[in-house]
Length: 596
Image (cartoon, rainbow, N blue to C red):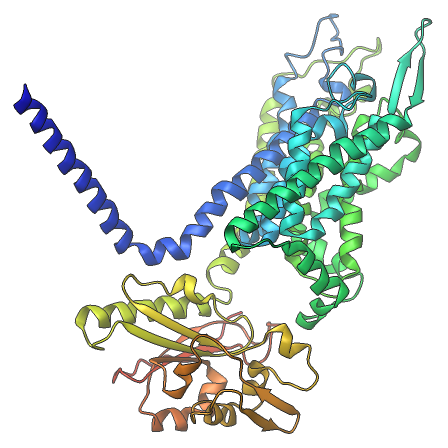
């Protein structure tokens, strides 16, 4: 027995060691890929997937508000049609999910480590959790357990506003969506419908309920989310910090957002929303037209879908307007609104693909009633037409989104990542062959602002890589007396390179006709006193400093396709990357082909 126990202990010890060593070897072999692509997969699971699911759940709740899905609708035989409509009830959630999963902008931006991605996920999940409060029938408020005058609210609603507080910690601009949502919920919570003895209804308004919901639900649990976010920042940074206040101070108080580009006030209307919506834009505009085509029915209790449209547009419109006041605008700032746009676009798609007899959409209950006022059943042969029309629209959505999504994700401005992948392969090969005789490599990026992902794509186990790039920080951008290093290099590449690599001591500024170019203090400042292992520059600047590079003994390694200059709205220098190394005698030259 003792020998058996000892054998089992030895086996399990060897097994655990094998698993541990195998896991370590797997991580070391794939460390470069895991660190560069790991955040993408992580965001796909923790951000993109919950957002898509929330879009489906929002539409699933909304579809039950329409009269033609309710069990109270009677068929021609006086029976209940709720079972025969079960298939139809799933179409709005289905097409909402299709819109979300085929959207080119979701695929391009949602899986990236943007703060806007987290903001979009928190907002989509929050709207799904708050669906009864935002879209539920007023006279069912108390029976559904949504809220009452004592301030008791659903746990889902509390969790939603905690997510709202966390979203505000990530980006304070998310308040442009959460504050209108809180106001809408508070106003709806104060509306009660009392049923009188004679069967008539009377609308009452309870101001105490409004204040209670606004303070006890929206504000209290929103602040709790902010507190949780501050605690997370305290754990991550090692000191107490409130990043969203710094973000507000930098962008609003100081107005430094304009340092990174400005756009007109209406840019989001004529450029931002059309680009982000893509193929969903016609459906969104049609939904907006339907909303205001018959204003007299908007407040009607029987027209719940119009009320739903009002709530969704009531979140989107203030968000877009408030963001329009900022001079600096980007497409990704509209990402949090895309889930709601998907729901609105899918509403119109349902009417397009699901047609009843004589081409009447099933959303219009009165149009499918017979002379006795009873709803007609759907014939079985109509389901084939419905399926064919659905497949056609599904194919159109894919063809209008995926081709340019693949282009933008795999070809468009691929230079930065392609360069770093090439460099990591070259460095790994040299280390394995022991060509350099050292495990420390240095890379200098002489390019414009934000031109490379840097260390996330440069990680190699047991190899130290020091990277340096030209300064374009807000400190130099906002100063009228200094010129950023990136601008100074683009204005005079040869002069800047001579000054930089002529062993200037710290704090010395290079005279310029436009001002002073001051080098920043950074961890690898000492590396400027010697040539780097690799030098990465754009092709135009490489041609200017080629003679100096040859004097240094550096050889041209290769060129990477990057952008189409004729279509690019970027600086004219963003054409192609050239790789140069001081330790490699090879020369790999490619014809310069520019891509956008």
